[in-house]
Length: 328
Image (tube, rainbow, N blue to C red; front, side):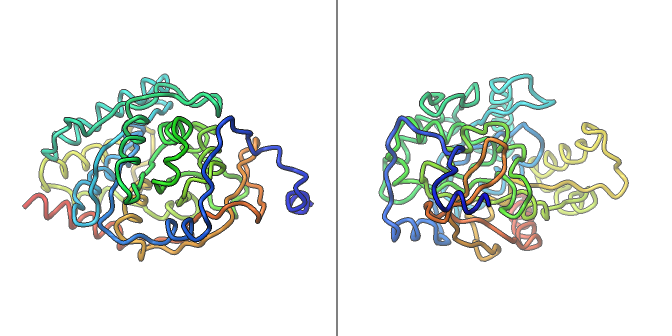
């Protein structure tokens, strides 16, 4: 019944009305932007780096993949959980964590790392301005070559940049780790539910979007302490640091360490940019994110790409080899 109402255009309550007019990409251009990319790519990374311990792996993985990714900037994204009392504190802690990673990888932070939003998006006509959002706009408009925005947290910075300058829709491709798979009974997960308004902007603005769901896709990126020790211990300052924060995490979340493993979610977005051949995906009409944080469907909507499968071993193997090579 719900799908019939949507198809008839009678139930679109969850699609926000925007004050801005967004560019409408011709279908051929949209399909081209959503096709698996050929490297090297222009890339920026938007990351809630201190939220837990998986973004750190993703940032290092991207920095150690220069043949595939030209990482132009890293943006600190907001988050709020047991590690942060507010979105702004989470953003600042993420900024500081990015600096720690860059120090251990001997990467300069000058003109490379930007603070993002200090609060989540409250209205789709009032973007949260930040250095990160402005830098994203500037970089997107600086070249005809698409800029890939690897979005690893709440998409507040990215959504704000789109609301500030809608024309960047014609210049960027967003690869977002967020939401559940389309067949899941609900859409909500940490990145999506942290900023539902920004998540709706991702789906409704028409920006070329590749969604990498948590369940049932990136949930396969499990890593155990034993495997982390085998491939990270002694692999330079950054290898030892990643092992340290990974090994300490079960105590932080009061997990049973016996046979424990952790999903390293965020390396999925980096891996997709490096080699889409490790993934299965499909073009679909972009879903509608309802106020109940579920998906509704209308096949008349613009296309996006959703990932349905990934090769866990290819991704971890590539990342660990690159960390090892950097340590030599």
